[in-house]
Image (cartoon, rainbow, N blue to C red):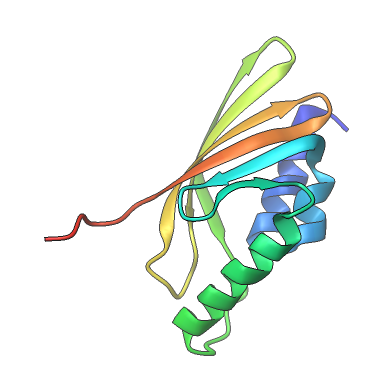
Length: 122
C-alpha cells in the first residue's frame, strides 16, 4: 500500500470504530498517544479502542449513530517518504472532539498524537 492508501484505511477504521481496519493501515512500530491514556502500542490498541467505545456508548445513552467518529479539516504535507497529516475529529452524539497529528511512512501509519478540545475549569 502507498502512504495515501495507509492513511485512507486508517481514517476509514476510525470513522467506523473498527480496530482491525485502523491497525491494517499501521506500521508494526505504531504508537497512539492519548493524553488521558498515555502511549498505546499496536498490541494494546484494540483494548484501548474498546474502552473508548464503552465511554462513547455511555455518553450517547444508547442513541444510535452511523459513524463512530467524524474526520474533517484534513491537511497533509509530504516530506520525502514521510507524510504528516493533521485533522479535526469529533465523536457524534458527544462533546468529545479534538485534533490529531499523524505520521505516515511507506510501512503505514507510524504514530498519532491527539489533543482534546475542551474548556478549562473555572
